[in-house]
Amino acid sequence: MCGIVGILSHEPVAQRLVDGLKRLEYRGYDSAGIAVINDNKIRRCRSQGKIVNLDARLAQEKIDGVIGIAHTRWATHGMPTEENAHPHMTEEVAIVHNGIIENYKVLRDDLIEKGFSFYSQTDSEVIAQLLTFFEKESTSHLEAIFKTLDKLEGAYALGIMFKADPTRLYGMRKGSPLAIGHGEKGEMFLGSDALALAGLAENLTYLEDGDLAVLTRDNIEIFDKDHKKAIRPSQRYTAGFEAISKAPYDHFMLKEIYEQPDVVRQTLNTYLSADKKSLSFPKLTFDPDSISKLTIVACGTSYYAGLVAKYWIEQIARISVDVDIASEFRYRQPPMPKEGVALFISQSGETADTMAAHEYAVSERQQTLGIINVPNSSLARAVHTPLMTYAGPEIGVASTKAFSTQLCVLAAFALHLAHERGLVSSEKLEQHCHDLASLPNALEQVLGLAASCKDIAEDLSKAQDILYIGRGTSYAIALEGALKLKEISYIHAEGCAAGELKHGPIALVDENVPVIVVAPSDALFEKLASNVQEAAARKGQVVFISDKKGQQAYHGDALARLTVPDTTVFTAPFIYTVPVQLLAYYTAVHKGTDVDQPRNLAKSVTVE
Ligand code: AGP
Image (cartoon, rainbow, N blue to C red; front, side, top):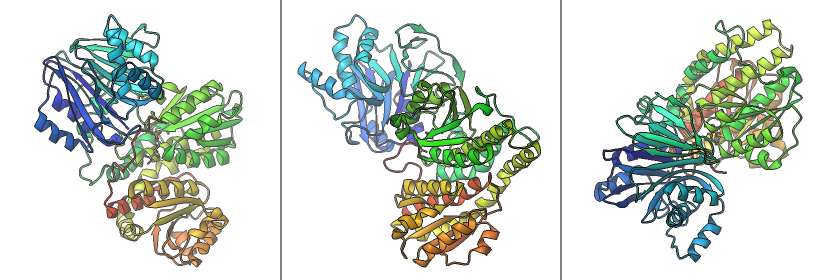
């Protein structure tokens, strides 16, 4: 997703702008650029592709100044070319934009009629042209900005600077996050998130939706959506970027897979009691006994975490759960039960579809909870009850440790609901909590399969199509495993409920198709084993992931077997996720793809 950095200083800013963009690379992008004001001119340098290309251009063009804005672009409107890269500008003003201006065509046509010329295929350029138009019609830049914003429909986070006033930077947000960094020594900063500002400022202010911030070197003024002055709290953010490097691993994704024992431990420490015999769950805004239905909404990997939770909550807490992907839910607009409860899961806390789905649930008078990894993110500030995960910043676009920590919170939530509804005794609760508390060690153990996964991945990397199958919560892990593989290795992969194989997908199976089987020896094992036989009988290349008992029980052919520790209803999804993460990782490494920043993908999809 796009990234914004802005710096207002009394020293040259170009290098620090580029360094800020480098901290945002993890969000995914396809072009980048900076603009500065110097000698009463706006000077711009942009490049297609990675930031190293921008560095090279800057070494030639040597632009600099004491005020500047910068941007990494993830293309939405217009190809990822230099012409479409931000900043977009006229002689008078330069802007950087995250989001989508939905009515840009109408605005563009109107401006062309007024004699304006456009040089890109982007929606964002219309903002720079509108500001130029309104600057001539306004008594102040603030007025010109307000007039421009009133014309815009859609979502934006914006950084703006006017040639005529190099003492001010403007930042605003509507649907896309933006933070202000309070510098020392007469500096101020703008950034899409705390990481953009790491190393520049530790004292941050997050703008609220509709806010406009006016930055001078020693002051910040914030105006709310009604153009009234507003005060927003600031907080310290000290997890500086230097703490986030991939060393000693080759990729952030592998590092984050190996961080799972620790971050699972940290997250469980928040939701289990100190003696790990019961829960310490936050106070809820509803009575668990009164819930008729729980709605869970998310996207991608977060949706698969919600799917695991559906099985847990329905089986343990006896509450009906409706799980949906946010992009469908928000337009399906289902009637929701009075006094119902809706749970939103989002690592970034900024996914546009999930945010919009949340707004719909609130309009249906639902009590809302969010399971979120990024503090102060939009969703964390929007839900009635934020339930934070403690995975730390997840840099790899493919989500791994965030998923595991989401499962931690969901398992604790399921147990909390069940216990509050009198469906789980304190003794049984103690047993479940003990099982969860044993997860970090079990995860350390299952990471020992890395070498085996690396060997199997060599075969997988030659496949055109790969099937993942499972039953119950293992069906959700099959879906997650397929997503991991396809998003980083670009091999087509499909997760399938094992019982569904014979209803169509088994037509895909032949000697060229690996079938990854997620098979804990649980109550569904026998049924799953016969589905595996169906695939093996058609020469499917079975990779059988199970515990010792399951391996002994499955006598069919297999390309490979991976044996994991014994598990329980709560620990199985955690343990079986690690092999499918490792298989995806090593397959992508064999394929030579960009594991941490796969093509076409972004870490946080803040556009719909
Ligand atoms: C997962 O590996 C993908 N990167 C993607 O599906 C992701 O889970 C999805 O975009 C949701 O992101 P969120 O958790 O930040 O809302």
